[in-house]
Image (cartoon, rainbow, N blue to C red; front, side, top):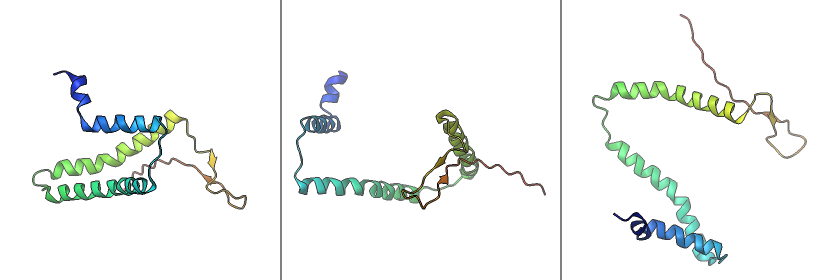
Length: 122
């Protein structure tokens, strides 16, 4: 019932607090421990993808075919709308070039956000 007391007993919150205190105290890590933590951090994303794949393997699309088709049709529209909205929000324009390399011999690659909608006639 008492939320701060429950949060103070949560191991994730405690780990974040101790990590923050360690960082603010500017204490270093043993290189071996640092390497182990780095390897665990690199293994997190593949492990999450494997767990997601296992759960999706058990998923059966019985009766949800219409829902899946609607999601597949709306996903490109939603992503395009989000890209267009972010481009407008951040003030990105097609005419701003961005350099893709560090030497003078490279040509700058144009930064483009393109939204193409094609309606083909029969």
